[in-house]
Image (cartoon, rainbow, N blue to C red):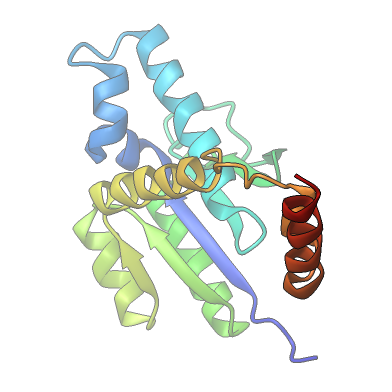
Length: 179
């Protein structure tokens, strides 16, 4: 059996929340705490569903201005969620994770609309996707899943359908002769 290639999905959390059309619609124009938290939860759920079994996924949020942020990650549905440590931007964490993955020859996709990050990871030879591109991909993923779950019309299963045609013809002949 051929060895499966390792794949890593890196998501620039706050950038995608602010730039991805899917999450702008959830958060609305005001970005209240409740709306923003709802959008963040939607992003996490979307990454969990999109990554599935094909990708290891990490969502990096910027915690650089929070003096209590340690950079520790927690796992939600198999996706690592992390805030950058105090004094360090999410951009630097993403760039480092991408570079390290490339050194280990891990196929990596970075999701961000930040041009600086895109240019940097592209220089490493890493694929990138915009926040809106990710929004579209997630919507298509859910649509494909919905279509897969669409109920199929059940085929009528009769005795006549399970009998070979020659036997069926003989039975019909017997029935017609008995009348």
